[in-house]
Length: 105
Length: 105
DNA sequence: ATCTTTTGTAACCCAGGGGTTGCACATCCC
DNA sequence: GGGATGTGCAACCCCTGGGTTACAAAAGAT
Image (cartoon, rainbow over the protein chains, first blue to last red):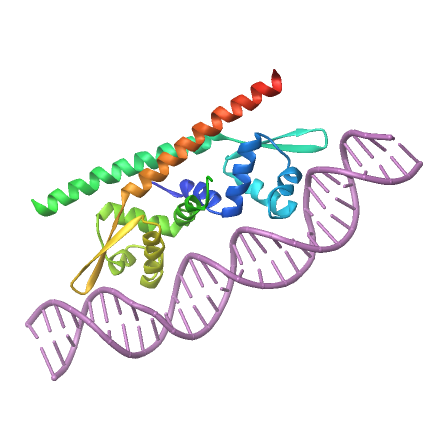
């Protein structure tokens, strides 16, 4: 029900350096793996792997320009997940309140 | 800045079975590790480990009743994270728009 | 044509984490 | 007191995944 699709996004966001990659990307708007690797504490292949993960869950997109591949963040995905989390929190909240009332009643 | 505290919550939510634990807990409102383990595909020690992780990041709380420990979800944490994600998404959105405008201009 | 830069990937290393079993200690029930 | 039932760990296994180096092929630059 409230299933597995969520966890993929979460685990994608759950790694510190991957988060750094995302942030760095959001700050510069667009950038290649090589450029990002220059300002991050990891190698280019590492950055690429992270970008692939982020791409798989739709948190970034990519376009090819000449020989280089430019990645950019997809904010809709973040928004969507945020919304679903908020909904879920609300749902659980009301349910917990109901259960508590029932227990006391 | 938009730093590491976030990633802990995300990585906590990022594991499928841990997510199951959280959901199961939210459905029953409160429950011990043993009870949860009975309806989940993993052993009690596994459930405990997951609960500890969730506890560390504040996604669940626990109270001791007699010999058993009852865990319950903390929705505030979920809400808070959801809010911050939404904020971040908005911030990035405007920034990306600005950058794009700048590039075109 | 050549030299440089960037991508794409393969091969590999290694720590951490999710999972298990097993057992000692605490509680409750009668 | 004694038998269930729960909790708390420790010890261990195994695999995933984050990281690296190294090299070949593609695209620019001169």
